[in-house]
Amino acid sequence: MLSDVKTRKAYYPGAKEIHASFLVAHPDALTFGDASGDQLPWTLITGVDPNNTDDICFKTEAFCSLFAETAIEAQSVSDFIDRAVEFANKTLWGTLCATIIVHPKSLDDSQVAAALEHAIANLRYGMICVNLRAELGFDRMQGTWGGFPGHDIYNVQSGIGLTHNVLMFERPQKTVVRGPFTKSPNPFVITSKRMDKFGKKMAYYEASPSLWKLFVLLWTALRC
Image (cartoon, rainbow, N blue to C red):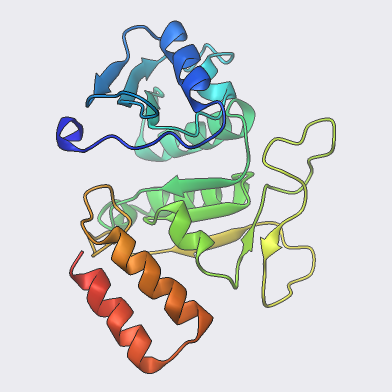
């Protein structure tokens, strides 16, 4: 599928150099699509050793068209959730946001449901999204957006302080956003053909909200 998706400009400063450093560390990475000029290929690194805690995939923010995958051994689903939380908290760089994908049938198991709530409570991330991508949590201005509290100038990682929080909660720790396990229209997915049109209409709506503009915005999203 990625081979059929047009590559895009790597706009982030230093993206090419960062991407190259990942390929040096993982020469077996899979790349998709033609890249030339200021574009980079879609890149997938699989089977990263979770015990190699200094791996570049765990310690460097790629901020380009690159995705890495690692597998964690566990005896059960609830055990896996607990181990994944520990891995994320102790090994991964950054504390901005985390996404958990869980099927509703899995939550019929009381141990899995309890493990999920335990994970949400213990993940040291500023935004936790369940069955939603992080940007959907970002768009909800009532919540907070920023790294988990506790960073300082000697270990900034995802930043100090936060933004959004329009309801003015005092000393918030994290924001949790939950959604259904379902495929819904999303103008921001990579295969969307109307992302630019939706973005413009969303800007118009946010600048001057109205019921008509909201209807047009939703109609555009449904057609993406």
